[in-house]
Image 1: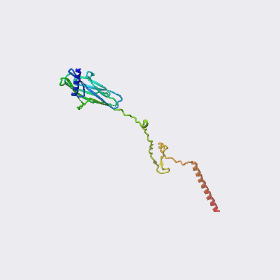
Image 2: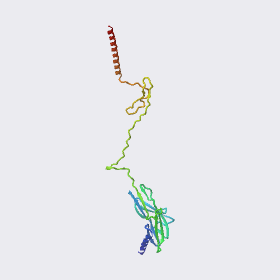
Image 3: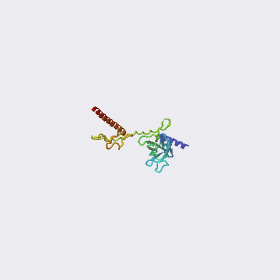
Image 4: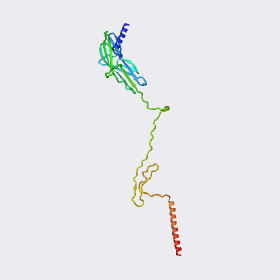
Length: 259
């Protein structure tokens, strides 16, 4: 019972000497430290991921008992929350350096914290001759860190569909093609030089579609149609009959004058 009380008191003293960055214990001429990590997740995350954090010791610094093949300790935190690396046991006064970083594979819509914390652990003997620790950390840029905290962000994908009143989904109006305009090629106009039938050669009018056919209005001058031939014959006959009547009238008048 006395031993447990001593360990608790020593742990509290170590916390006061160091910082709030570690969980401490003292016993039998050695001290232990467990480094904590806070994982903050921002955004409406669809499901909790397993976030992994890596503790690496420099220059043979003591490590937790459970390490991977590379000699690093791995801490897994599911979703947002906190966790601690395994306890590190120190038996000699010394200064040690560690790095803590997040190790995550790229994932859609996630932005993972790329901070690498540098943690310095000073192991020393207190006034009672017991080993204790003091911990400090910086953010990798030389500025002091109050906690080893990683902030990860999730940004939900934006919707590509817009809904309007009544819940119906609007669709973009189809582009209405402008009315096609027929391009009429200008045909050179030839003018006959004097003589009978002189005039414009090859002039033509557009057909119903508004386009002049390539084989219309081109080439030699053609006679102009005057309409119904039967009407022309009738008019000609009347003229001839009138002329005959005039001649007969003249002849008859001359005879009367002679008598």
